[in-house]
Figure 1 (spheres, rainbow, N blue to C red):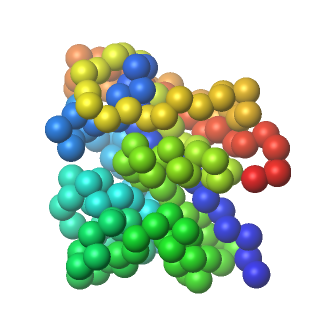
Figure 2 (cartoon, helix red, strand yellow):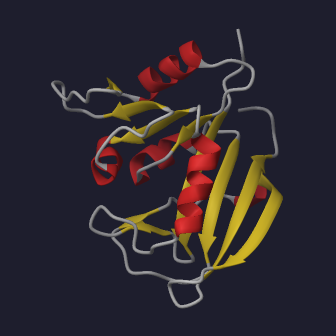
Length: 172
């Protein structure tokens, strides 16, 4: 069986804000392109609220939505009721080149932090007001393998970094 490659993909402010009123509190087109580049052809796993903030299944990707609502259906997406069920779908659809992405929200990130091997973080270099936060995690358990610094032409010259963290131990 192919080992499951599970990664978190998140954009977060310095104060760990990831959302406000079920939307991103910033507008960074380069981050959206980065998201598309990483996830195209892969499986993305999200909570219901994250899906509803996007509004439709994302094309070119297998969309898995986790919800507690028993009768929730989305044409063009797979709906499950737990992270464990989502991981079973990922195992069924994965090959040696597959990467499965957890793309939000807060509760799902909290669950996935314990089991993912990699995190792709867009670190927004400013605090934002918000009502959804990325969970705190022990950075000493992760090795930074990449950091690309950028300045947005919009958003008042907002600085952001594309960062890749790899879990140090293989005991996941």
